[in-house]
Image 1 (cartoon, rainbow, N blue to C red):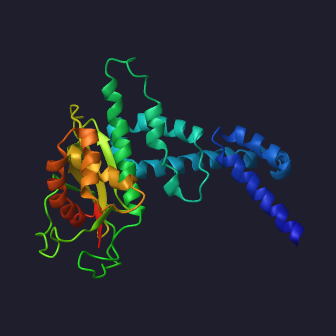
Image 2: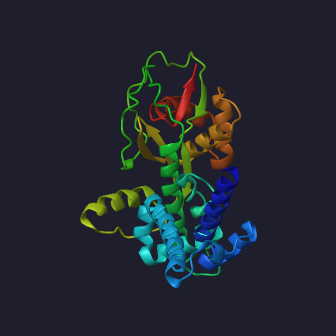
Length: 312
């Protein structure tokens, strides 16, 4: 019985290797024969009809993986067009075959793959045209990661539990700026000395295009089947986070972006606001004093929007 089970496991592994190989069916069959010392004719019944099914399974397997990439990058697919998007998908799957049991990991390297496929800087007069779809891919991956990342749903600002049954919506809600969600609590005054850390579900993007406005237009255009026009270059800074299972995209000022980057890179929660101000000054040239004052006002607001976590 044990030998029969081992044999069945070998046959299953042989077929999976053959149909899932990134190089196609023939390359998969060759790899399977080398790995398991099993010949194709020994596993398939004689006759062309039976043998012809394996390429169909192999083609179907890659199409399913391509559909997963479509689900992860819907706005990018509409922006590039299906034909070009599918071309990049095939190239990506050939170079980065799936090795994880979770399809969440399949598209993790797709933005980097697109970035590496760009022409070298200076080789094309319209270099920025190639940057836009790459930045869009990084935004869509950030959205997917924030949906899955550990969040703060278990505890609200008042310490009460959030509703764990709240469904995750498919729409990415956009906010034009970081406005306070509530008035600052009088108990959170300067007499306290809290520590701050970046929210575990926070993702940050430094971009060369106004992606937030484009994303909003693309989502709105889904209903009436219209596509927004690619915007002109305009540097910006974005934060993607989650509140009560709702993914939110925030526009940041440059100094706010560097504050959040510093908190993400810190090995422990930071309670030295002056230190944060100095990190901002290194990247922006802003005054330490002015930034420190702005930080004391903005950090509680950022906490309300689940960008940072305030610790006693």
